[in-house]
Image 1: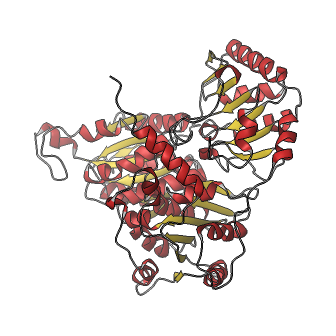
Image 2 (image 1 turned 120 degrees about the horizontal axis):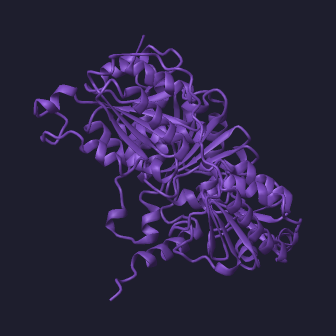
Length: 558
């Protein structure tokens, strides 16, 4: 015999989850006891629920699914920002919350950790806005079905779900789970697929210099392999939208950089925007990804391949799955290398770094050049919202180097928790390297303590420029100035009596080089606080920020 909690833990194990992130509270304590019976799952404690949510987000990016266990209401609502981020970024995070005793509602009891009302379903209703399914398990007869169905939907839709389990049911007897295959039943409509492929192939084969652009939905649609096959079959030059950076190998010949409107990689926008046909695979055209909606794209030349439909020059073909479309299209294209040859003629990537004396103060440009030099096929790079976005876009990633940032949701503070989650996911196999601004770090700094607790070994570059650089470029004011910390000294605090992490502060090029050498040799967490000038930011941030600011300031239509 099993229990409700043990049943759920087994299902998490079966979908490939090895670790779950936890903040305890009285409504989930018995549930956590039941989880501990499963010796194939590791409980990872976090300092607070928001950090735990960010950690689950980072873990999910590395493994494909994640689990987050919280207490009722105060825990769940504390994490809801992170869960909304996972929803925006298409990440199947399984949110599990303890809930009130099944007898409390019937008895009209007013409980702690609530708003003081008799209806306790408002937490489920709130999560319904940022999940694809939100359920309360308060009946033993439907517990198994709801668990299986909810997890299945999370994996199919690649979005978070919320499962609330009444505290007096967590250890209630339940038949053990039988083997179950969690697979999607979605299929392309054969006629629509054929018509979409024919229309797209006709447009692309008639073009003299067609191009391809990868988008963020490729990952959630499980279509990256199909996209690579299309690139190989066509010979076209391909670029990545900013939030799809690193999805495909950037070291391959066909790759021409990041297409980001006016702040694209050098030469990239010229090739894409002069193309007579372009296919965007899995795009999201937001104010951030288009630099204030500044892309110069002609709808008559445009093919948009979305997860469930395709638009060819304004004509929509529904019930067409992205991977199916790309796979079939690859079989119907003629090789055309014109756009790639055109890019090679104008290629002239500006140098990321410049020569500096060892005693010179560190520039942001040289910092990212140094980070680029230590990246390899076993690196997981995590980049926080802010100036690091724009410097990260200029990095040349080696093959198999992972790159993660949160562009759609853009919640500052995300990267610290995400670094923890990524490090737990890849522990002993890959090394996580993070670039985090000082303002963002102040929101979630305490999770470094758990990185030390679980002996993971990321290298964190804390970029100290005394403020919110990205906000300054969008709209400046006194609110963008923050209180400075002695960030590297926090490592001593978090180490306490048993930690082995190492930290330092660097001001010069020589000190940075020595710190990186030490960090690479260190098998524990390394924390490098890098002091840079407050006004030293990527030039693309200046232009991007001004255009986003203009978009934000458009007056209401009369």
